[in-house]
Image 1 (cartoon, one colour):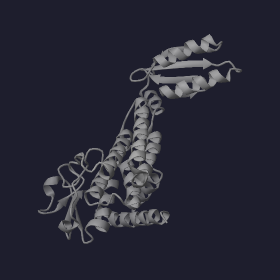
Image 2 (cartoon, rainbow, N blue to C red):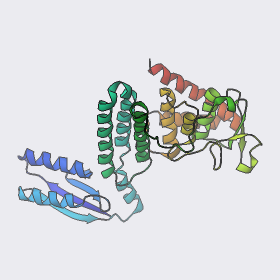
Image 3 (cartoon, rainbow, N blue to C red):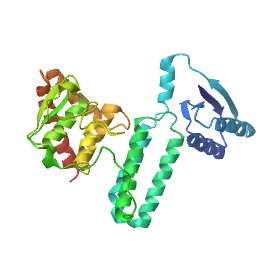
Image 4 (tube, rainbow, N blue to C red):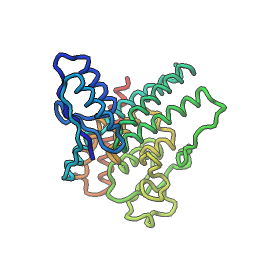
Length: 313
């Protein structure tokens, strides 16, 4: 399942030490403890460990490579967790967001250079992402959005990629509506209901259903299979609603969206996510009904949004 390298380098050879460190980082190896490094057998350049073994020995150091196969499932999960690239993808998405914000001022040539550098960074990270998941998908979506923005600014005659299921909608068509979603709402449904009430349909009324067949006639469904608004590709329902109604350019809503995404489907960690989850858990303990839970969640999300808005000034 894994290949391991145990090494001890000559103390006086700083050049070798730096070369080994760079090579281990480049191939995506993780450190178990001082002098013990690991790579998955599948998908990784395990030959890199053997090359390092030979080089270290040639310079008078100690190096041994061997196969490592944990017996317990929890040990396997723990080792896989050491290759989690979510934080790296988070840093990359931050760079992509900064580039998107400055794209209009960069101009076509510098903008294209920034685009290519970020694409190279994406490819480099993907090569050492041996157990990809939500974080990689989020980064890919952010980069696709950056490319689309570049095309809007500097390639107006080129065809744009289709955003199936995310076509722009007029809020006027969704006023004074009944909105239906599943009972016992949690993060994505609560945040989506807040977004609807605060930014889309201020007179919205909500019904909580056990199954899609219970949806009232003419009600707008959200966050269940077959609903008018639900997950699309890598986006959770909150993100889909924000994009459909042109709200995804609001930086404060974007920060809430990132926290909701992480809490609902995982991916790139978000600093505010744990606090939001804790507050909503408290609301769930206090509330006696789904309506009461939404009322508590509305207050929490109002404060979070106000805090994010204040931080922009």
